Image: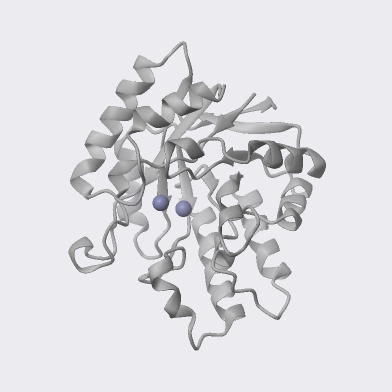
Length: 268
Ligand SMILES: [Zn+2]
Ligand SMILES: [Zn+2]
């Protein structure tokens, strides 16, 4: 079984390609399931007054879901299309996020921490925010947010759980306890995680999460799915061989998949 549960498309403003191109790429690569999971519209900052091209405008959200559902129907029999959302966790905006999560028939919702306040820690235009900060303090704030995201009950799995390493800022101190706390929160609240291949192309030079975290996740019985985080149709399923080899070497023999927010484990 080959799947990919984390993809974007042109609506978000920083990805290339229509939804259908991602599905066709998945079919060409022999995937049995493709998850569409574009970014949730911005809620806590004014899009007109913030960095551009972060996410689809709010008025596009119903059209996004409609198009996903139409494609799911169109391609049924050829590939299982899953309708998802990468739902940012933004502390203090849980009710607004819940409204979006409850308003549509999602197959799954990814809980991703991008924002610490108004700082998107995954945006290359905002890297200057690291200046003058204690790296370990930022890590602590980030992993606190991951724990809170896991506790909301809004999400099916946590996206790129150690994305805070993206720009290569690594604390001198040992961050293991922070990472473990986040994983324990994921386990406690019955969530899964993903192995997200996109980290390979960043300054972190490794997938999300690290092998150490993946081993710890396995020990805690946390199910895992795979995501390319593709922002171009060609990237669908990227680094699958490396990803699946790493998962197997850690001990995983099954991946978790989602349909109507029900999860299922399947051998890969
Ligand atoms: Zn994106
Ligand atoms: Zn993300």
